[in-house]
Amino acid sequence: MQQPIIRLDNVWKTYRMGSVSVDALRGLTLDIRKGEFVAVQGASGSGKSTAMNIIGCLDYPTKGKVLLEGKDVEGLDESELAQARGRKIGFVFQQFNLMPNLTALENVSLPMVFQGVPKAERLRRSRQLLVQVGLGERLAHLPRELSGGQQQRVSVARALANDPEIILADEPTGNLDSATGKSVMQLLKDLHGHGRTVVLVTHDAQLARSAERAIFIRDGRVAG
Image (cartoon, rainbow, N blue to C red; front, side, top):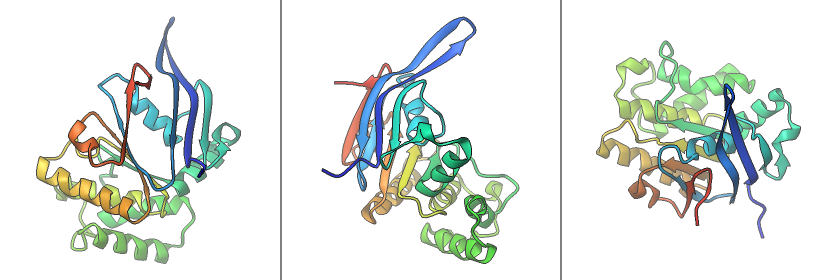
């Protein structure tokens, strides 16, 4: 059987608030295989966004193991983890998280700066990606000059900048109208169709139906 591209093994995440401990994840175990389109579902406060941060190596578990392509991320220092995350994983967030003073082209180029990609190649690839998401005429526009749907398309292009194997999308249509949200979901489906592993974090059952498989999180663990 193919090795999971991501494995969470009995992962706990505990936050301390003064003298109080809060367990956001409570022994979460799941596998995501290369090329899958998986929806991670759960109500607000279920732990799904914490799970996304752990899956994306944005945070460390309090206990348990996180394996990225079979490698335990606990053995990586912060610099090694950032490099692995930058090469392997692309992020699409509900709030877009674009740099307000950078153009669409510059926002897409930014992840490649941290991977040491030469400037000419950064610009070539950024233009190509923006054309791919339908924004070839918006290269020089700042985020405030773009609609919400256009900003999310820039963020999808940015997620693809380093040609990652995994796309993590956290409520990617949450700030969009339904028609624009459908177009963004179609982009994610197209990426999956071209072999990417897509993990969609959502509370929306209708969006989750776009995925091949759904994982339900309740009280910090897989339900059922």
